[in-house]
Length: 213
Image 1 (spheres, helix red, strand yellow):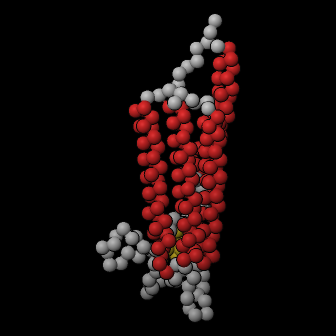
Image 2 (tube, rainbow, N blue to C red):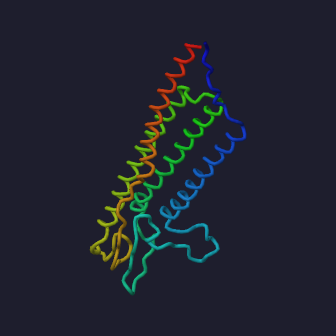
Image 3 (cartoon, rainbow, N blue to C red):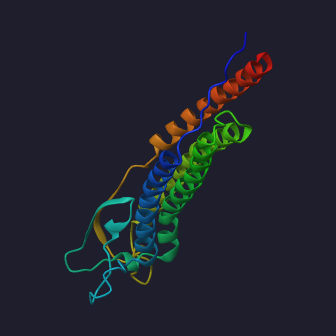
């Protein structure tokens, strides 16, 4: 009696569709992040280059929900110190790297499965690394967003001895968003870690079955 080992190979067309879907989703997220980064770091929406004034309000920061300046004052994101803007950009940078790395590892998993090797050591390793990247990347992103929000609240206050405000203008109302933790990414990381365990068990079973054949 012999046991037939299943052929897990998929068609090239299906593989290409899956890979394109992965990179479309990842590319869209990365593009949105890059636009947000350019706004946060420069204080301007540079894509409206034909406009005479491309300065953005401080609410363009992901951490700020509402900002009302004094009635006789003007306040723009360009007035905010570069260090604070850079700090507010760090969660977006982290998210961009997390998405990029995740897409690379998912693409690697898809290619291996397409070649009929779903339980290959590289697949198991990629699931493990993917879980690590998502959980750690999400955690770092949440911590950085918390720190950025705290820095904005700490900067809001009285003017210095020269009458200058740390955020560049006197804000009567400044509402900072609560820390944004990418729970979905972190949950996907936990699921990826669980899949790594499942695929490792599948690899052991495949070896045992091959020994019986």
